Length: 452
Image (cartoon, rainbow, N blue to C red; front, side, top):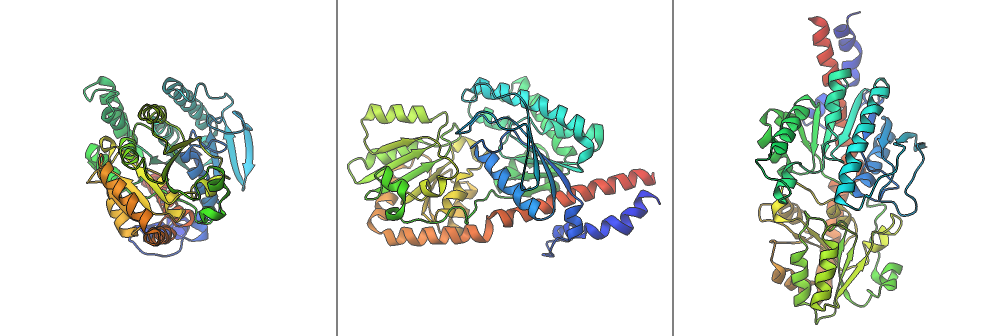
């Protein structure tokens, strides 16, 4: 039997769902289609790392596994774990095989160390694919590290293994926006040329916002039809609103009787910290406390500036263990999410979704053209502020402090919006459709080659 005949008689029946999905129907994926996928996920970060990308991937693969997808993960040794800097080389969790590189990460807290770790992990991931390319029929690659998707291109050239790229952030665009490298640098031209080839050969490209899609299409218009906008998510069953008076974390850090403004997550170069600082300066004589949980390149700068100004309305805490997050994220009256104006459309703040799950109002600091403005308006979960508008942010904080019922309504609305749009179950179905389509497209390509 010729390959194209087998496709018509067998595979097309099982893969019919993604075709229907492409036509915007809502048919439920068939069990056959799900079981036909043997997925290999390649990402540098995965628990016990507390990096947000790794925790999101963990939730995603659990959901895909429950939908019948056979999954294998190749990841690195932890560089940002709480209890240990090593993890088993091979382990099974929820019927998912997890394989880790053998060498621990070097200086993960330094920029140079991160770059070296990224290169070493990419080389190890290449060897992993060379040895195990026949075990799976589709590959899911993240941009952690940024140049990782290039091994998908190599896997396709060498083994015809279809791959899907998940673009968490866009490089070299971010490096250019932050002034790390010049737009005219030869490395930028090379990187963009490689990106273009990687995207052209990919069977699917997943971006986290409409603005990111526009950026990719601007660089490579030919891939517009294969780009899917799929948001990040948070688990509303894991993060449940807890009243501050019933929250041990709020009691531990003396937050119960103060209006608390929370910034939880990375304080990196792509985030606007200055606007929050300006608001805190204006509110320093009022019963309002700013709590910053996490790390990042701007954390030390912020701490030094707070100390220089003599501000006493800041509390700085390290990243919290996953088991603590349901308490730390709800030990506040307002959550802050920010994106630096220079990196608009290049990054997406995953902390937004856990903030929605917490049932607290949200203040988003972003550019006037950010997609976040429409999302916040649709969710009725808070308000948005221009980068640099510390006065407007301070006024909003005062408003919520005077009228807590308004904040409660915003928090409930945001959580409901999350439950309707951004849960692991909802988002995993969107990923499943993309993966099914990737497998289907490669089978069709093979069929056409066989006919020729």
